[in-house]
Amino acid sequence: MSKDPHTRNIVRLMITSGDHLLVAKYQQGNEAIYFLPGGGIEYNESLIVAARRELAEEIGITEDQIKFIEPIAVYEHSWDDKGKPIHEISIVCKCGIDGLSADKEVISKESHLKFIWQKVATLSTINFLPEDFKIHVPKWVKQEPQIISFFASGMTKLEP
Image (cartoon, rainbow, N blue to C red; front, side, top):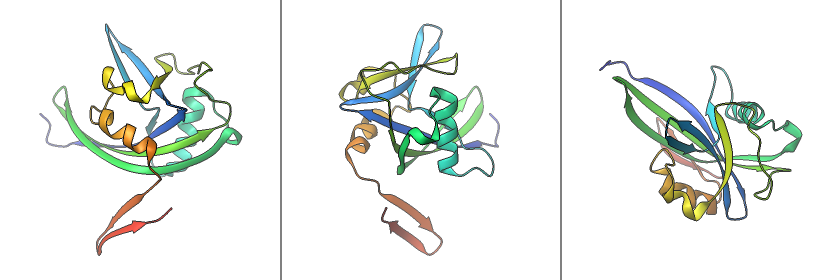
């Protein structure tokens, strides 16, 4: 295994409609993998700009459709990908989008992804990754944004 881990900064977007959550579905052979929409934050790109770009790239959302993007959690996890250590830092954001609702199909602009509305209460029944999100996302859907920042001088809670 390589000793140099690769760290990815990711924006993950929680878009809800009633008791449903928009999830991305990736088919890998016979296995379906589900995850929150979003993706990598590019060099010199802010979190909000990355979120807007990912929404446009994945489902064609325009800036005027976005009502809000609120960071709500930071989640870190690591894994081994074929001998290469990966460290992912996900900034999870709640999003409000005009024109998206669980009674309307969301068309993917990326051929390898499909988007579905999944009942939040049933996330534990699908291959929803990272695995811990099955526990955390239902809690995050209910809570108000709370950003915890760590500084050299200690921990400071920033109110939205």
